[in-house]
Length: 147
Length: 235
Image 1 (tube, rainbow over the protein chains, first blue to last red):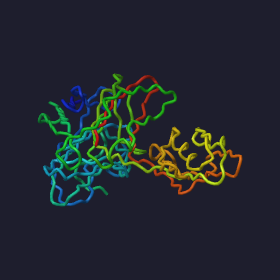
Image 2: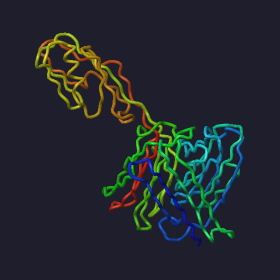
Image 3: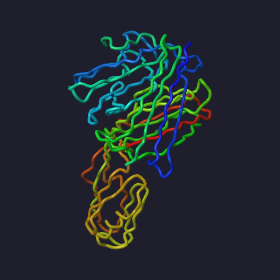
Image 4: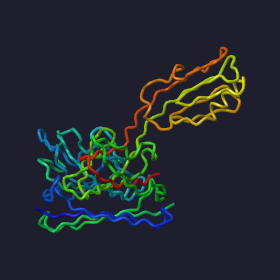
């Protein structure tokens, strides 16, 4: 088993009258256990040059992961403040990551095409996107064909 | 404008053969600008003890600007490894937050639409006539339709807000929140009219609502006490 920790800090001195200083660290365990997640797609950095939706973590046909629980990191590395990526799950938009924004969320890929995560860049002029899954899923691959 | 900084760090010495030590920091800005997000729900803690287990609505599409650079933070405060919250956007399951897990993700805040209708006070009313809607009964203190419309507008409705031009005969009603009204058209029969004469309060221009597809729900895995911490940064 591996030990991986994820930490988040949120700080502001002027969002409230009082300052905000929130800090969290969690260890990434397999669902319902204290056994560490032991697979990762690795940190992928890709340069996208089309506004075509793509699937960063394709799930292989016939695979089910209904009760598994991985974590997903996605970041928009663009430095153009108006450029964004739309992150969707299944048929619904989660939200937009603007230049420099990142996200970290749990993800339970039930089966191929059921609740796939997808990314759609806002521009075709070239944008770096970074993503990684840490998981114990059966059969997901980064950057492979999603058919 | 406010300056709020988010930093994520991922670390592992044994997940891969080379150590993982990764960090990213970014200010939370409004969409397409370098202006900081200045609105927040505040840091909230919600307790779940429902038996049977129910979902709870954490953030409604109306709570933020649609397609803004909104961000949601959530954390499962449980210390029991098997306990989790399932996080949904509308009906789509995102994943499970197990004990101690946190999430930080953008939010489209895709909201729906509100029901709207117009009620027109007309014909002959008498002092003491009543019109009741949404549990609120208005007693006419005048026989003048414009005055009665003023009274209807002045009332406080649990589920509706009104707009009205003083002394006009019409009052426009709109849902307080979008998406809750379903697809049922509001009709004249939904108001209860009691008049000594031939007064009317007809409803027209009715519109149905459209569901909020961006609402964020969570559902706990257990009916025993379990707490969720959550915060919305939005524009």
